[in-house]
Image 1 (cartoon, rainbow, N blue to C red):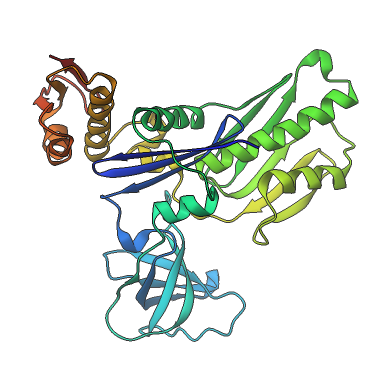
Image 2 (cartoon, helix red, strand yellow; image 1 turned 135 degrees about the vertical axis):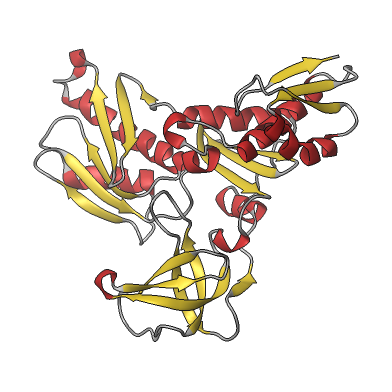
Length: 341
């Protein structure tokens, strides 16, 4: 298995991309705009704000103007309303859902950050140990390519795989070309390839929760399918695998960890619209890319809306004297024009 790692250190944001056997699997983003207490793995002192017996948990105040949900399933945790406890963030926020924390033990003092989350570099070392990252222009391009791949359905030889997410679950539909549909060998091979492709796509998009995979055909060898699924999605004990039902659907439940990629990249994910802060970051990255692409140009200027230019200015200043911005409110948020001199 070939593993490639790309690391783009643009002012304001650090991005890491992992590609295995030619397919992007992870896109990690560490932004200066992030709330440190809301990163995966951060430990904080929290105050229990409200009991939620119907959910078998409680809502806790992290002291940053937000709250998190703490599961109390399994019992044995003393967390009365008003008590101070130490918690670890185990699932970042996502649309309509507060972040989730786990109980560590009793604590004292006001809600605050105790231990920062593992850095992107530390996470990268765990996911791709010993691989030296590629930096510079190639790393920026890899990040853009990973984003593009996350927004398309994965392709498999002889068939297609559609991976979609609703509020309730992730659905996967594996299909085979019509002329191969009745051939058992081609069907089984497409199901194996489809499971691997679906797992890669779900990891790249940072999706989790209930996953329903519509396999090709019926009458499957359940043990063989489960073996392939575990190889594709992993043997993490937190993953729950169900049997293939009589309709040819395999179900599994993946633990939520990071904010879905589309919610990190876009203010309005459904239409892929950038907010001003996100647009400022992308303008900065684009200018850096142009600077690396042609070192002979004396000046690279990006025209963008005034609000985006205002937010990008301190970031672009770090790129050096060749990098410049020009306000142009005729452009919508999220669009910019590069001018070289």
